[in-house]
Image (cartoon, rainbow, N blue to C red; front, side, top):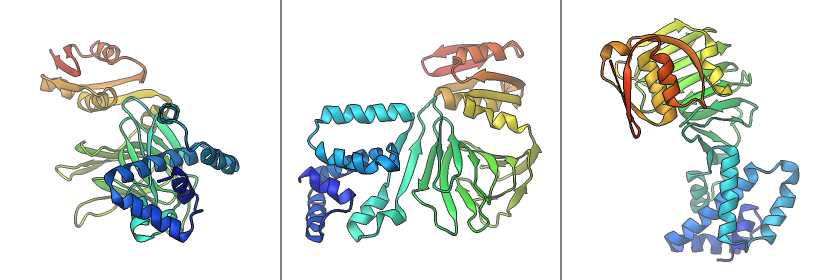
Length: 323
């Protein structure tokens, strides 16, 4: 298939008979589908990294350079990923529904931002809401929100600064709880493999509902934190210093009277290691301190053990802590 057909399909320039020929070609083989989606990723990367005012010029340049080498294309993609520090997977299943059933892509297309280990990133959604994503987080969101609601899906940790809109509540769906707001700033800690879900309210008001039958919504006030145990379904609301849950966006890891068990979980996720604590007494030890995200893990452990004596060994990505 001539790649110009694919480019013209993305820009909506194909005639009806040409579009049918392209869709038939895609259905012919898995190799054809992979080539189509590869070209779609290139196109979406261009859209996501090009200002609207320059889009037409770049679109024409893309059409003029259809025959560029695969090596050059791969280098271009690599550089974009390095600059963004995230992997952007645009459209997903929505694009395939478009191909098979003629549903308009603009009405169902979604984007997923995946943050690599040890990285952080930020983005602004179509309604102006700002989102900061922490290490190993995934956020799925539509290109454009519906006028009556704004819904995103989160796996990980994110700080949201939501634009107020009384007619369209902002919903954050996670594997364990749903967060509903109109306009506010709050942090959500909701990794799928974590037994704990947390939402910390900086300003405004949020409503939280666990994903279990008969769950009663809970409202938070500023400086309150909602903690939900996914396994026992127990909830707890406590007063906190919200600074601890905002400084990570600036590359500062803050612990304010945190139990060592919680600190270990965060260190495991950020440094992608397994930490085994052989002494249960250490898990209840509480620590207050700040570190840079660029600090080696050994530096953090060496500082913490000045306040609570312990030893540790490192074997690859496995760290064992003992008395």
